[in-house]
Length: 239
Image (cartoon, rainbow, N blue to C red):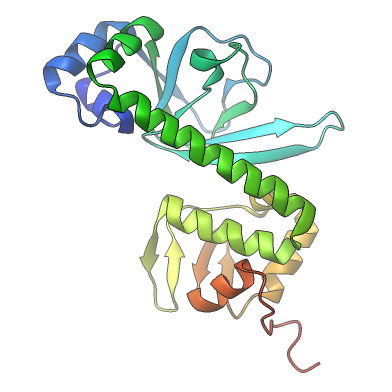
């Protein structure tokens, strides 16, 4: 199915294009629906030379080590592109992409994208900025896995998730809009499910967790933990 103008506009790098310019791209687009749990692409798949972008929904991007352990690299929200090797690399999917909700994935053929970039170089600049942010985040993740304590990685993950998905005020604090199950958090910061449960219990005075919903009770204390500053946690009180 061909993308609508609204679906094209939903992609951040195209947000500033005029309707007539978007209309030129339409014949070279395709939109496909994925149900929750469905695989969009598998690690190692050969990818056609296209731009892949998420028009609606949430995607999970994960990589599996030779040991079989899966690590969640990031959760992608609507408006973002992914699978950069299809355009800029060897055309092989570097990770597995799975739909976490009902998703609409938009693809655009390479040639019309390059033509659009010729007229609007800022598209390429935006793409470079996104890729640079991802490289920095990956570097921080790798560094954190090597040198940071699990509690610090957890606090940093919560902060990033709050920025990515946004929060809404609740009676006790700021609740993340997205639901994040224990297994997803654990795989994102390189710990076991059981350790993830234990860590959330230890920071119960700072962040609460109930059925996938995180509520930040004390943003200042969370920031302190994320910075590696020692904070008196629930598990330390009374000791």
